[in-house]
Length: 191
Image 1 (tube, helix red, strand yellow):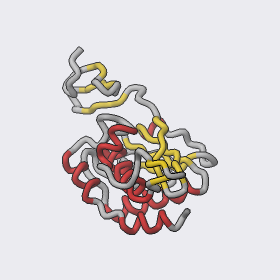
Image 2: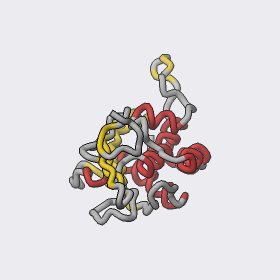
Image 3: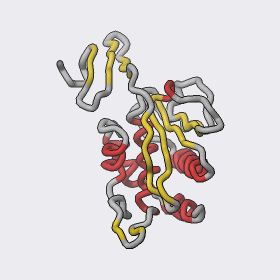
Image 4: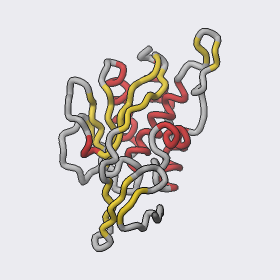
């Protein structure tokens, strides 16, 4: 099977299923679904979920929805209207990530999602990972943790969420250069 993104119908090496409509140049995910994983925070691991926003389980007693695509018309807790294959407004991104961190601290599970759950979703997760990698304790009971401070947030997202996440060079640069100092300060205050 051809694993390139130019296929008509198939699955790439990450398990992402594609159906490409060459007439309209639209790539849609087919059953990619939600993924749940943990991001290190000062108080321990925060449970995060992400994927295509269409898969968001609308249960406000458990989930906090961060809609990362302007073209999606569905209920949300926070919207960051990011154009496809682009980066978010830095102020909107910072606010949404802060609200996701605060929601996580009170027991809700943030759900980040765009159309396919890769580029825009991955970009927002990269900012969250950068905060987590900057605030996670280096040691617990004298043991060095594998996610100790630092590390590349783009690599972290691709390892812990989806290999194809953060799709463009512009998104990679945005995540790596995003200033998380205020978010780190506020996150540490939640211990």
